[in-house]
Image 1: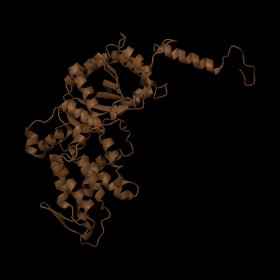
Image 2: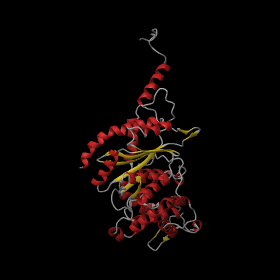
Image 3: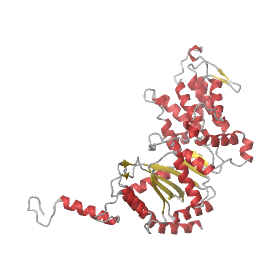
Image 4: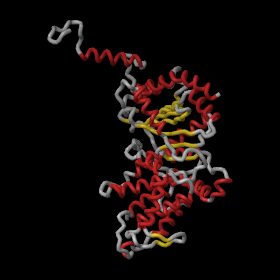
Length: 445
């Protein structure tokens, strides 16, 4: 047809084509024309379908959740642990895939997050365990991971990485190591503090819990004390100091960098000598030493600093910490007390009364407050207390898996989509990928 010609009678209105497309999609996903079931019922009925019965592990309505894992995924993970000397996993969640649904008349779910555990073998990212849920607290993450360990009799990984979402960190530590995050940090700190113990004694936990450095650096760059009201040079200096701490390979090295940072940030003048049992120096001399350390590790620091602005972490809704996290007034942990002692060893009681003529342009006490908050758990985000493996933990391949699902499985769909459509397309993709994974298993032999 040319523009301006009469429209033939065989061409229907747009509404007819939209209705036809909708009916075709419903047929594709097994929904009959007169099917009046709600989404929650459709998902529940999927668990009884012979096609999905072996892959859907658990379905619940309150809280709404679907846990799924194929037998091939279990086999791949077991073979991966058998072949690789240091099996690593990455755990993350995304809330960009599924819309809220009505789980019962008049009651909507919370935000639905897609959780997944992935491995990376020969530069191939393979998902091995998944969950869709409206509940994101640490207790639920523990239940999810322990179900994986107990039902399929898989062993915990030697190393597990996630971003700084608290529920994930707490859940992994409790499920894999059977201890709270506070106990884990103290045990690892005491093990790594004395170099002879580190060389002779085994690591005190089953799984090394680590934070993704990209997310950590990006989150630190957004601290309120480093906002845009400060000079760019000051902010960049302290961000690079954080990356320097991340790259520390021993507790003694971390302690030295931490003390130098405290002197620079807590002393308001550059010509006042700070005296400690170990050294005597001014804030200017401490800053010069830090800059020398940064210069020596230039390429590494530049790489870590490049992660600023790349933080796409999604902090889950409905986040409730474990009781150990919310109780106030308790005694500080061993690691936290060690950090506080380092700060108090150089912190002046009355900074305004310190004599001196040269003002310190890097004087920033609020930075030490934020640094203390994360420093009390430094074994999670530095290389100072790890037995082996990569210096810098990364879950980039996990983010790559989410991108692959978004741009591959759902490339022709608008996300977030309805729950049953998401599950059917994803489960069909997992089932179709089982043939590929079976071929990949030959590489494990």
